Amino acid sequence: MTNVRKEIEEMSALGPLPPERGADTELIRRYENLYRAITKPTTDDEARALVRLLGQDGCFGLASSLMHLIETAPGWPLEECLRNQDNEWIVEMRNRAIRSGRIQLAKDEVWPQESGHSSKKE
Image (cartoon, rainbow, N blue to C red; front, top):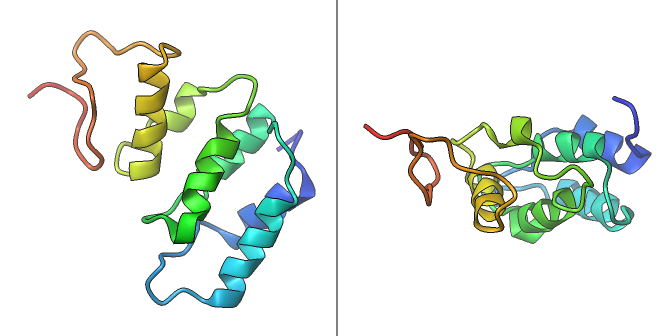
């Protein structure tokens, strides 16, 4: 990836945010320290990398913080980043983009979307 700062590369190397239950406090601290070292705005490439870090829960507030950081990218919303409708954080970011008028619903889509459910009419 081009245009990605070392802090985001290091976070990417750690993989998706771990679940809160049973989380390694040192690993959480590492994510937090890297997050705090990132200044806004992100680049589009950085937003793409950060979206892949969103895990299955809030990870002690880090997921929400990453969501807000991702949304600072100049090209946000990046529709290719909003396709995983099984991830509640991606669903939320997509819903926020729809509510703000930055992306439009497809003709056969139902909104608002609840996480973990198909967005197509049955």
